[in-house]
Amino acid sequence: MNSLKDLKPEELGPRQKIIEAATVLFAHEGLHGTSTRDIARESGLNVSLISYYFGGKENLYKTVIQEFVLNVFSHIENVINEFEQDEVSAKSIERAIRSLIETLVDMRVANPHVVKILTREKISGLPFSREIHETMLTNAGEKIESIIAHGQKAGVVNKKINSRLFLICLVEGVMGYFNMLDCQCSWNKGLYEMPDQRKEFTNQISTLFLEGILK
Image (cartoon, rainbow, N blue to C red; front, side, top):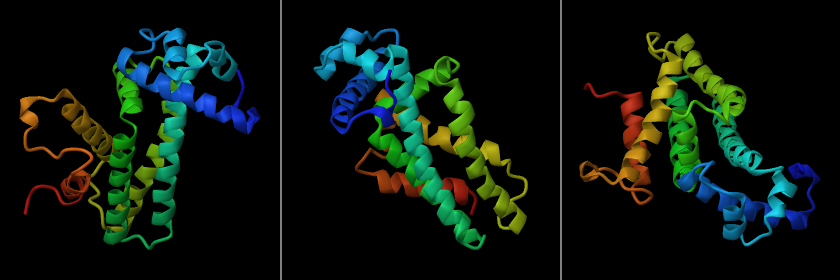
C-alpha cells in the first residue's frame, strides 16, 4: 500500500480511476457485495493495482470515505474561518448557517454515491468508518457547534437550543431529504428536484432552521 504523498504524478490518474469505480460499486452493492475483480473490471485496470495503491479492498473502502470526509471538512473549515472574521451577530450567524447548508447540499448533489456508502455505514453501526467519524467528523461538528455557542453568548441565538441536537437535525434532515428523493415515492411530487431546484431547497431549509414555522 502506498500513501498519496509517495505516489508519482503519473500514478494519481490510475488511483483516481480505481476510487471512482469502487465508489459506484460500493454504493450499489456494498463492501461485501463488491469484489476486487469487479473494481478492476469497472476501472479498466489490473486487479493488482488495488493492493498496490490501497493494500486491499477494505482499505480502498475506507479511503473512499476518508477522502470525501476530508473534502467536506475543508469546506466546513472555510465556513468557520469566514465566521470567525466577522463580529458575532444575528447576520453573521445566519450567513454561517446558510453557508453550512449550501455546503451540505452541494456535497450531496456532487457525491451521491459516497453519501449512500456513509448512510449504509451509519445503519450498520459504523463497522469500517468509526475512527473517521470519531475524529474528523466529530472535529467538524464541534467547530459548527461553536458558532451556535458564540451566538448564544452574544444573545442572538436562543439559549434553550441544544447546539448538538440542532446540528444533527440539520445534517440528517438534508441527507434524509435526498434519501427520500432517491426512493422515488409518489409522495415526492411537489418536492424540490435536484440539482435544478437546489437554490429553492437551500432557501427553504435555511428558513426552517433559522426562522422556524411560526409567524
